[in-house]
Amino acid sequence: MSVIVYKVGVDLRVSSNKSYCKELKNKVSSGYKLREILNIVDGMHFRLYEEKHELSHLYEAKIAKMGNAGRNGGEYYTPRPLIKTIVKVVDPKIGETIYDGACGSAGFLVESYNYLTENQAKLSSAQMATLQNKTFYGKEIKSLAYIIGIMNMILHGIEAPNIRHMDTLAQNINDIQEKDRYNVILANPPFGAGIGREIQQNFPIKTGETAFLFLQHFIKILKAGGRAGIVIKNTFLSNTDNASVSLRKLLLENCNLHTVLDLPGGVFAGAGVKTVVLFFEKGKPTKKVWFYSLNLGRNLGKGNPLNEVDLAEFIKLQKTKADSENSWSVDVSSVDQETFDLSVKNPNKKDETVLRTPDEIIKEMDKLDTEIKSSILSIKKII
Image (cartoon, rainbow, N blue to C red; front, top):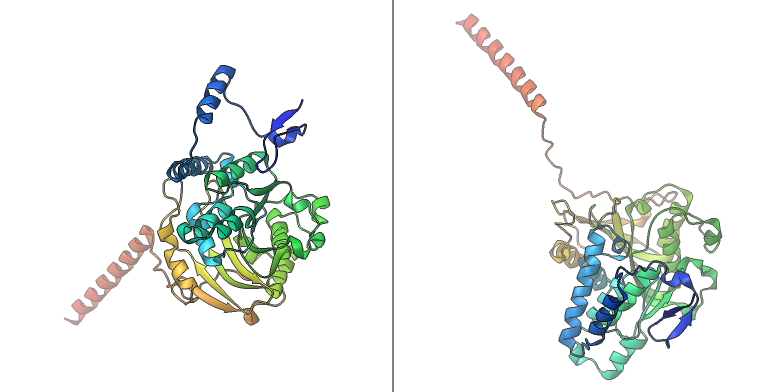
């Protein structure tokens, strides 16, 4: 059976590839109702900026709810306060190419566009044309995420998204040429074991961990002097398996890993792992790494999500990489040259007072009471 597919930037075409829409399920059982819905949507023009802006916010809110509910959207949704923070630190410029090889709902690309068009009135038509056609690039393997991402970009003003529906890891990184590289990479790649040997053959460091293969891809496809902000499991910093050690060595020797943001648990809805954000620049080895541990003093969750205020201190301190109770620097020369262990160990964190249990307090009181009675008896004997 043929399926009619509309791909942004491409003419309407007929595709016999059923996998393209295998994740999409029509929940409108009545064809008449579906026709009514399509007619209503077709009558919405959204020509005004305010109308598009309102719809884009509604769309983002829907994606966020999908993520918080732990359904499909959770695979594609990175909290927007975190994305905005990563974009601010990496600081992309107009004229640079920005890439996300696991773009999901295209949050990084959308927020980069918002960042670069913050003062849109001051941008020339040539600059806007560059942003529209020669700036944002992405890849996504899952059909639903691919469609969500394209729609998200369109609603935020990127009229012809350059997103490809493909498996990023299927490309042998040795085939990547200079013309394929990007100035900026922003991504939160999927993590988890299970990548087959066939795909692993595309990478010099063999591993079944998805995120570690993506990191190799990102390092390879980043231009010399290019900058990246990548979310990854915090175990990457300390795992002792050969792949983890080799990948840390590769990163430290080929890139300047200048900043590591250590995130608390609960940042990602439904994810039971802690993560860090790696900020690096390709082309020169790492000499010093600045760490920041985000300590919020509260548990994050669906009703208490991460917000921009939570990340304000990190953004402020990162500019000068200053030491604080939550931040410190590590010289790579002091790192174990066999394991390249970069575990988060904050030397500036104040020791917390250890509270005693009720039993310990009672035992201490009994001990003091005994000592007091003994002292009283001694005094009485003297008297």
